[in-house]
Image 1 (cartoon, rainbow, N blue to C red):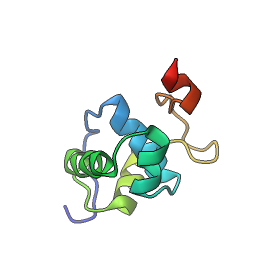
Image 2: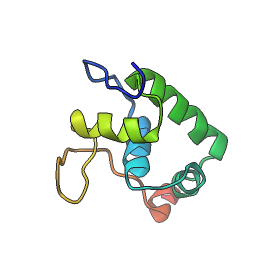
Image 3: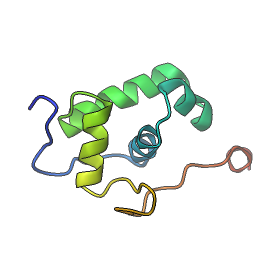
Length: 93
C-alpha cells in the first residue's frame, strides 16, 4: 500500500528498532551510521529492510507506522521500551 501502513506490526530486530528511533529523531543515514559506529551502507540496508518489513515507502511513512504501533517514543508521547542506543564509551567496554 503506497505510503500506507500494514495491518499487523512487523517483526523487527533490536538494531532495526534503534534505527527507527533515530530516523524518528530526524537523523540522516550518515548521522545514524556515525552514532552507531557502522557504515552508511549498512544503515541504508537496514532502512531498506525495515521499509520492506513494515510495508512503508519512505521515512515519513515509516515514522507514522512506528508511532501507530508504539515502536517509538517522541517527546514522552507514545512511549515504549526500545533497546537503548549504546554510547561510544559503552561500545568499547
